[in-house]
Amino acid sequence: MASRLSRFWPTLSRVRLSSALGSRCVSQTPNSSASGAAVASDLQPVSPAAQDSHGHAEVSPFEKNPDFHGFHHHDSFVDEWNMRLAFFFGISVAIVVGGTFIHYLPDHGMRQWSRREAERLIKQREAEGLHLMTENYYDPSTIVLPSSGE
Amino acid sequence: MLKVLIPTIMLFPTIWLASPKWLWTTTTAHSLLIASISLMWLKWTSEAGWTSSNMYLATDPLSTPLLVLTCWLLPLMILASQNHISPEPISRQRSYITLLASLQTFLIMAFGATEIIMFYIMFEATLIPTLIIITRWGNQTERLNAGTYFLFYTLAGSLPLLVALLLLQQSTGTLSMLVLQYSQPLQLNSWGHMIWWAGCLIAFLVKMPLYGVHLWLPKAHVEAPVAGSMVLAAVLLKLGGYGMMRMMVMLDPLSKELAYPFIILALWGIIMTGLICLRQTDLKSLIAYSSVSHMGLVTGGIVIQTPWGFSGAIILMIAHGLVSSALFCLANTAYERTHSRTMM
Image 1 (cartoon, rainbow over the protein chains, first blue to last red):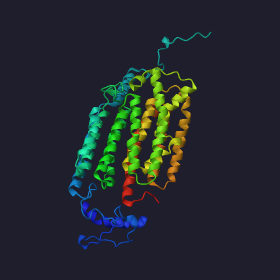
Image 2 (image 1 turned 30 degrees about the vertical axis):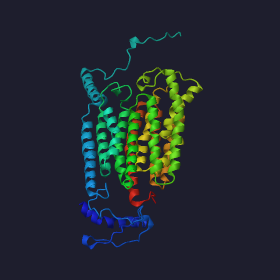
Image 3 (image 1 turned 180 degrees about the vertical axis):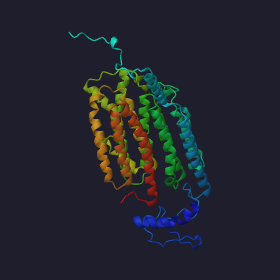
Image 4 (image 1 turned 90 degrees about the horizontal axis):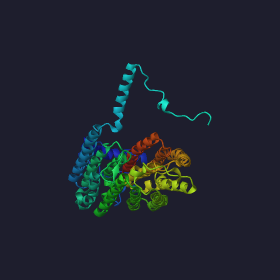
């Protein structure tokens, strides 16, 4: 699937970017009949903005290495292993194992316990016919007020 | 704490001893392992709040999410900058990753610090690698101006903080957060005390940034390379928020009256920077101003000193850290392919 996409990439980049932004990035690779892909003709000539810092025209890295993963431009072996390790440690270890670890962490701040306890107390008090909560937070008999003369 | 700090310090030998072919692969894998180990901080073991194995480095439910965010960010920065740094000579590549790893180390020690002076030193220490990243690896000539603004705005705010911390040490005898959270409220009733109150907070307000002192942020974020922008937006701004949350504990009761100008500036900043975003043509500049806007809301949440405000501020800091660094990464992806940041 990646190789099929890479066959269309020069076309896609040329058509999309050239039409939207003028001649910004134009692939300079010649139309290769051996690839068998339907290719649009060059829409615009090369502009100085489409060259990289060495002054060469931009070449799609998929020409040299159709399985380019984006990590290493010249060595496909390093590129592939970089992709594998990045995905393994990034997704399989960090996200999957890490996510599982987070899921099974104990009840943080006793939130789920407090919800269960509240529901249990409500059921108990309704069964006994008591109020769910008393009006007074403090016992009124313990409050000592100054006499009204002061 | 050391389970994460020592592997992070061992990143430096990894960077300098790895063979050039495998440099980025090994650093990516190593930093992702550190990120996975850092998740163990999320286990809340102590009802008292702070979890510590020694007196100097501890975590509590406020610093833990920020620590995990910091550790998660380093592999993302390495992945994002691999493409544009790879053409450079190998020792410069190693220096670049070394600067990112040193930022990680300073940030772990900052968020894990129990002494406020340790936090202050790490707060200042993060300026140096960031300045080097902006001025050495930025793409435009404006990066020198950006570095100057970044450095001097933060330093001008943090020198009063140093004086304020020394005064606090003098009057209370300790600067340990573990102790200060239980101390008696201070008698704060004179103009000098009000200036001390402002001195404690200005450094963090500049770092957040608050709307009136935010000028360094659009410059620094835009001129920095992608990893610099990511770490600035995701974590360094949160240093300001975290510092404010720690300091607010001991600044009562003056905060009841003195907080109003900052609440007003924060809220006004949200609206103004949001409107400024609508007029931007540069994509990175738009993301930078949106960061100011979000951090204005965090500032507002912290300065009103309610439990909900604090919780909301923490959640927004983590969310913004993840999203803003991802936005800068995407902007860089677009820039790498079109060589333009203009949106028109």
